[in-house]
Amino acid sequence: MGKYNKQGDCKMINLVLSIRSLDIGGAERQFIELVENIDKNKFNVLVCTMYGGVQENIIKNIPNIKYVNLEKKGRYDFVNFYKKYKRVLKDFQPDVIYSFLGEMNLFSYWCKPKDTKIIWGFRASNMDLEKYGKVPQIMFWLQKYYSKKVDKIIANSYASIEFHKQNGFDMSKSLVIHNGIDTNKFKRFNDKREEFRKKHDLKETDIAIGIVARIDYMKGYIVFVKTIKKLLEKFDNIKVFAVGDGDEKIKKECEDILGKFNNNRFIWFGNQKNIENIYSGFDIVSSSSSFGEGFSNSIAEAMSCEIPCVVTDVGDSKIIVGDTGIVVEPNNVEQLYQGLETIIKKDYKELGKKARKRVEENFSIEKMVEKTEEEICAVL
Image 1 (cartoon, one colour):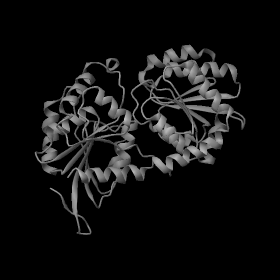
Image 2 (spheres, rainbow, N blue to C red):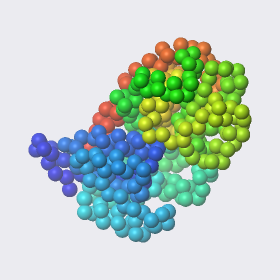
Image 3 (cartoon, one colour):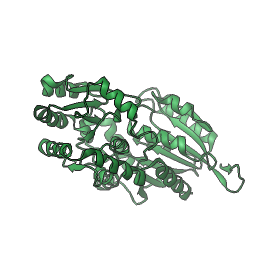
Image 4 (cartoon, one colour):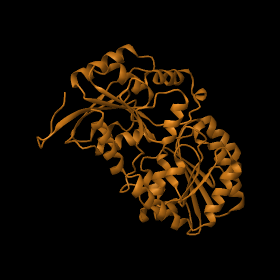
């Protein structure tokens, strides 16, 4: 299995890092950060995906790793995928597999060689599975059944551990490693801020409010736009920007609610690759999630860019924000409105500086990678 590292003084660990796909998303971003930053002198890394994805080239360009796209042929391609994944793992002989998210968690357990240790990654909390159809419900139940058989579960939030416990999972071998934010990438770029604000006709006294989330039931977009409509009616110096793509039905409902403000003072950006440049143009970020969050990357990324946040009390959002922003209950238009109005009237620029310091001290990439390496080694 493993081999000795370049210094010759300890065993190099054969590690498989696996995930369903490399499309745009918080879990995918954290996965890529881990692959990029894990110590290649300690770990001989093989990355496996089911479907590749739009960020596949990032992985392909990371030095000193191997990458395999297993090319699963759709949702019901079980047998061929199982055989292919099992063959790849047999050839690589991993000491440890660390898999992310439901489907890949299950196949990694089913396909692993006998002596290989398995770590599952959980990213969500308080999921309303009825909104996502039968297949996710089956995957959830199967993970619950096999949770007692895996060697370790790493969750990205305390809320995720509590949620799975309440739903009957064996979480006796679980622990929390919060997501890590690249504070060199996610910081305030004054030139990008000036460029953004000039492009969108924002004066110095204007306030740009952002939401960075896919358009999905769990992200609370309906509550958010109802809140924003009230704000736009009261404050003439506010513009709002939504970054993310997703459910067109939800978006259409939001557009109807916004009325005259839609595509005027409320701008839909869709998916964006260089989100750090867009954050620089914002003054305040809001997260209106109603359920399902574990650790919200968008909150921590915004804070790292010196932006204070108004967030709903979902997942570990309260832990992330601390005393640098405002936390309100989910699904409550009035509370979200009051939270945003309060922070508008505060010294939000000073709060933003405190927010960045909080991320640097608690949620850096270095802390996430160091803790993950320790837990991978510990499972052996």
